[in-house]
Image (cartoon, rainbow, N blue to C red; front, side, top):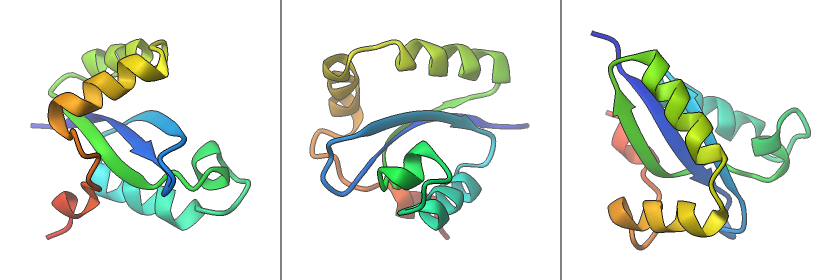
Length: 98
């Protein structure tokens, strides 16, 4: 069964938040990391490659709806959501590398 992820990344200074959706979080994290410091993408330009929050879904439609919902939230509301899972904003990238 497929798993889809809605995730939030931040930069080293924790000043930027990025919300995304993917069916392969490990691959997507690698892509974000490879683009850091480039102008190819928002995450590259702002060095967003540190995973600080994620949710899993079994249906892509729900994942996309959730991504859109989170993108519409204020930063404060996103910070409150992150705090429910990761109050100290530890980098979670290694959870997806075996």
